[in-house]
Image (cartoon, rainbow, N blue to C red; front, side):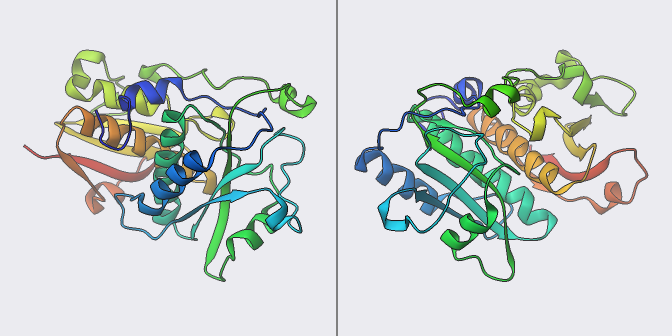
Amino acid sequence: MSNMFNRPVDELIKIRNSVRNYDNSPLSEEIINKIENFISKVENTFNQKIRIKLIRKDNSNKELKLGTYGVIKGANYFLTAVCEKDDLSLIALGYALEKAILYCTSLELGTVWLGGTFNKGEFAKAMSLNEKEILPIVSPVGYEGGKKSLIATLFGDNSKKRKDFSEICFYKNFNTPLTNSNAGKYFEPLEMLRFAPSAINKQPWRILKYDDNIHFYLSSAKELNKIDIGIGLCHFHLSAMDKNISGEFTSLSSIKDQDSKFTYVISWINSK
C-alpha cells in the first residue's frame, strides 16, 4: 500500500468518480488541514514547479466570483493548480493534481476535473497568477449531495466508461494489441492508467510495450491531453510503486524522432 494514502491506490482509483453536485455544508478544519498539508508536500516525478492551492468560497474572498457556469452545484472548495506553459509542466500538473485528488478520495470526498467550464479569470486572481503561469484546470472538493444542476445532467455520467485494454495498449508495434499475458507485471499498472479520467473521456493515451519497457504516446497533443497523460502516468506510477515494480520515466530521443501516427511523450525504463 502506498504510504501516501490510507487505502490501496488501485482501490482509490477504481472508486474515484466525477461528482458535480455537492453538499453545501463546510468541511471540518481537520479535513481542510489534512488537504492543505498534503498539497504543500505533493511531488511530481518530473521535477517541475506546480502550485496547488485549496480555495474556499466564503466571506473572506466574497469579491471573487468563483463560477463554474452552472455545471457544478453546491461546491465551496476548489483544488486549483497552476504551472508554466510548457509540455512537461502540463504533464506534471496532471500528475501532481491527480495525487491530490486521490488523497481527497481517500478522505471520502468527491472531486471532478474541470478544464473549460469555470471562470479562469477569477480563479487566476485567487491564485495570484504571474506572467509565466497558466491555470488550465480546477477541481471542486466536497461531500457529494443534493440534486444535479440541469447542465450537469446534460453532461451525463460517462465517468466509468473506458476503452478496452486492447484499444490503447500495444505490443512491439501499434498493429498488435497487448494481451494480459504479454503485459506481465505491467498489467495492473496499465489497467490503472486505463481507468484514468480524461477530457470528455477521450482517453488520448496509447501505450507500447517493447522488451520490458513501456512507451507512452498521445493520440492528440492538445493542451488538455497533456494534462490527461499526466493523470494516466500518475495512476501507472503509483500502481507500479505499490507493486514494487522498479523503473523510472525517461525521454528517449531515439523514439522521439521516429515517425508515428501518435505523439511520443515519455518511456518507463525497467530497473532490474
